[in-house]
Amino acid sequence: MQVRGGSGIFDGSGRSGGMRVRPWPGVHGAAGRSRDQMSPRARFALDLAQQRKEAGMSQAALSTRMRCHTSLISHLERGRRPPTLDFAEALDHAFHLDGHFVGLFRQIAHSPVKDGEFDLA
Image (cartoon, rainbow, N blue to C red; front, side, top):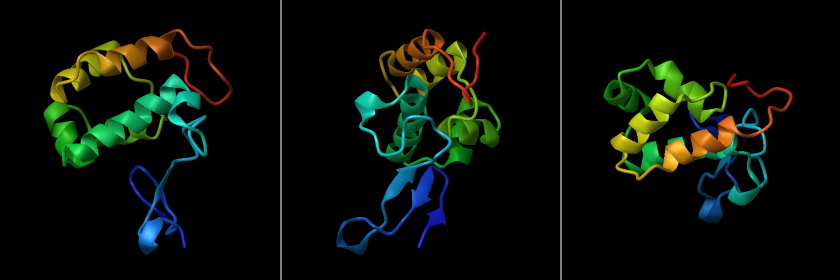
């Protein structure tokens, strides 16, 4: 049984009968790959969702903190919107990180655009 969730597809194949989250298929390079093999865009999306969940925040709570619409958080976590430098800096500040999201933003900005991915230019 598969159930769609906010950050992926729950497929019920986790250990001890628990649920496991697979990244959304829309995030290019994420499904079935190690983090090192993912595109910077997929890593940004995955890390955003992971940081938010580790902080115990919903997308709505993070959007309130970031002063943006909830749909922006959703689109970023699914790799459907490009991050901006300002937003990456604000994420680093919100999660008390030392340039993690800014570094991923810079990798995205210098990566070639593939079919189906966004263009930062």
